[in-house]
Image 1 (cartoon, one colour):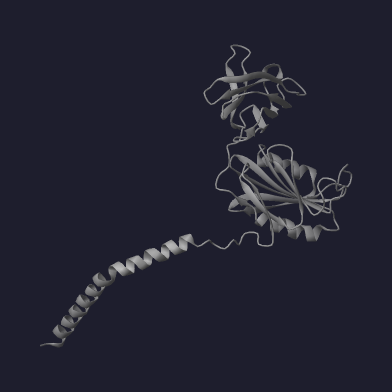
Image 2 (cartoon, helix red, strand yellow):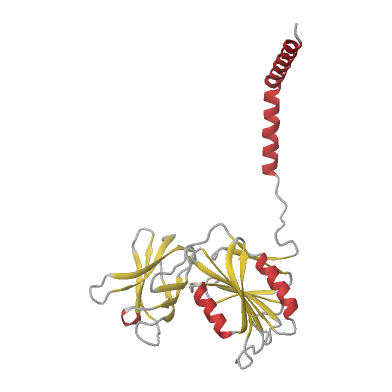
Length: 303
């Protein structure tokens, strides 16, 4: 028997043995693998996000933030669009040593950046990335002749996501600037966008700040925002239940410098219904034929 044939026979025998072992132990091996996969999926993962700070989560606007433990936090205005983080009590501090804010706005990043560049002294712009979203960061100083916070430093990082523009801002006095920059950079780098966010209630001419999609309303609803180009500066607010029945239909007149220009409104309507859910519609119509020109619809839950 040649050496080559002997080697081939030995290899064949080994393959047969290995094949037999595989089929014999296949079921126990598969069971072990399945147990390990299930065990790993059931084991809670260690939370490494923001281990030494406090977490603010804004599900309405689609982000969460990590800020320094012990800092004050306050939501200003409507629908958590503007949030402040400050080492002092907000808003009673008359002189901010350093304040970080997170703003959500309908304004486009290009318009905001143009405004920052025009109003800051010696502005510097660089690219900036937050949670994989590319944006622009502007650093500068408030002019010495400014009525508020003269010679304070400002940093604005601007990003667009979920149909919104996010602005993360630092306002700092010169004395604390170097320390505050470190806190600001840590804050911005730890900002995380959530998987999804409610659609913004902003149309072509109507921009609602309150209510927000999914809000709860208990016998009253606050309708606030901005609008433009409506005939005689008048909108219509119409609340329907989930069957489509009209609960109320009310006019809203907003203030504007001139007819057709942007103006604001803030009204509160009371209502009664036994329906668990409904939709608020805010719209304006054509003066020619009464057809709807722009309409914003917000789903609500009734308590």
